[in-house]
Image (cartoon, rainbow, N blue to C red; front, side):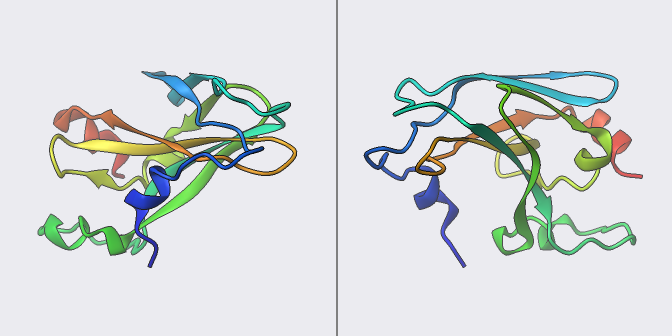
Amino acid sequence: GVNNKTAALKVTNPGYPGAPSSIKITKSSEGAHLSWEPPHCPAGNILEYSVCLAVRKSNTNAPTTDGSKTNTPANVAFFRVYCGPANQAVVLNSSLSAAHIDTTSKPAIIFRIAAKNEKGYGPATQVRWLQDVNSLSKFKK
């Protein structure tokens, strides 16, 4: 598989947009509301943004008693939850219910946001949305 850490630290290629910055995530009744600033170096017009959510690859309906199996990076995939020209998006609770909860430090949901211009997508900004352990049960139905 691809090493996600090297992809996130990729040096900006000439002509491609930089990474979005100043990402803000707020909770709403519908899910998570994300907003961000356009790249400092857009290298042309930004055509669209892409927001990806880290999700568990092995979706089983049975509750896992041992979370260690689902925390390995091999079980995580990034699923696009938004694609469009606006620098904001709402990720619905239905999508968040499939989210991979990263527990390497504090429980968090991981998003990646990238900008696209005429040449293509630039590097993504990865952000961790810290979760209250008590509120996580709401997503898991």
